[in-house]
Each structure stands twice: as structure tokens, then as C-alpha cells.
Image (cartoon, rainbow, N blue to C red; front, side, top):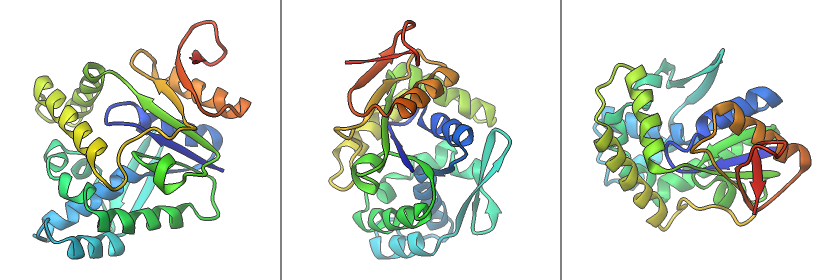
Length: 237
């Protein structure tokens, strides 16, 4: 079984995907971390971020593993735990050349498919349901208003001991949204047959129960919003 979860930064897709994989006993794959790992290695090896051939070579050779420790996922890159480095604000600012590179995306998409081959997985990203696995068994698109997304990102950074400027975070998220939606290769988009869930006012538990309910009933397509009367806290339009 393949479950694809897409959405912009701060929509709650990583938490939802991780929780869903744990609940169902599936493999969790964070594809955003793969792009971040390429960026991290490129910067540390002083690779020219305009050189797509060299970036693609890094994407082909890099070793990234997801290690689950209780409720946390640790990201091991080339044998070292680089979780803190991968999700730092400083690295986020350097991602554009990597996520917008057609050659890097092509290499990583094939690696994503290989990682999922023969397994039951929950894979999250921005083009999983549209590009990586257009025939996924279940597709979800998570969204949230930008103020809530900025608040969540600020909380993550504070928890890691980083300085936080909420307005700067909001501006970076808006800029990243524009980049993700406007690129020609693998843009951020909701698949036509994906369930759309607005998590702005949902807790992580409510979001998880919503996804589980849709998987249980086999519902596909449409839009979901929080409604207390329904079994999963959502309704479809």
C-alpha cells in the first residue's frame, strides 16, 4: 500500500505522515529530507549550486536513512545523524537551487520509487500524489493558513534552540510557496483524486484520525474540513 501525503511547509504533513505510518505499521519516508540532504552535502563540499550535473551526482550517491526513536525520526546522512542541520533555518534558505533542479528531482524521484518498491509506505512531500506515485492507493493534500504555519515553524525552531522572528518566518514560507508552485518540474499541487484536509484548527491527533477514517472507508477525492459531527472530524464537499 502506498499512501501519498502532500502539502506546503507547516501544513502538518510530516507529523501526520509519521503518526500514520506508526499507527498502521508502514514505512515512513520524508522526501523533503532527501532534498535537504543533497543541499547539505553540496554546501559542505563547496559544490557550485548552479552545476546541476554535480548536484545530480550527489543525489545519486548520498546515503540517507530514517531512524525512528520513539516519537522522533532521526535523519542519518552518510553515516552521521544530521537531523538538526537538515532542518535548520540556515539550510532552508539555500534549498531553492536543489528543489528547482530538474536533474536532481529526476534522480531523487527514482530513488523514492526504489525505496518504496515492495513495501507498504507513507511518503510525504510536495509532488508525491502527482509525480512520484500518481497511482498511490490513498492520496492526501494537507493545508493550513499561513499564520498557523508560521507559528508551527517558529515553535519547531524554538525547540531546537534557534532564534525566531515570526514575521521573517512567515515571509520565507510565502516565498517558498511561490517557488514550489511555480516551478516547471514537480510543482506543489493537489492531485485531482486527493483528499484535501485543512489542518489550521486540527490537532495532530484529529488530523491522524481524519486520515485513518478516509483510509478505512476507502474514500478518494474531494475536500475535507473539520466538523465535530462526522466520524473523523471532517466533511467532504
